[in-house]
Image (cartoon, rainbow, N blue to C red; front, side, top):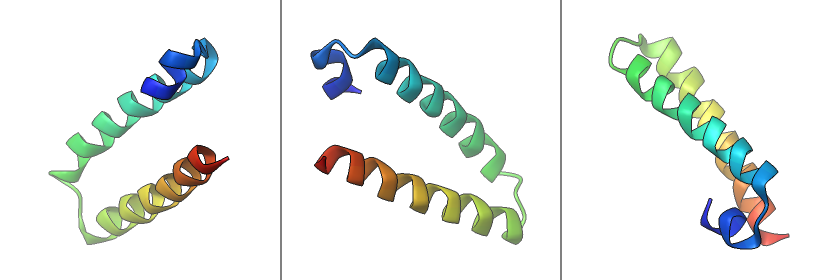
Length: 58
């Protein structure tokens, strides 16, 4: 988010802020999640991290 803010990229900043909000909601769901849901969320965030890292390197 800092990179987007420093670059003045408002669209990217809004996108990342939305993702952060969803992340918070997912974290709340984890407390009541069963094993399958925990695996699903873990896989989802593993993929999201790969995408963010790839974006950062470009």
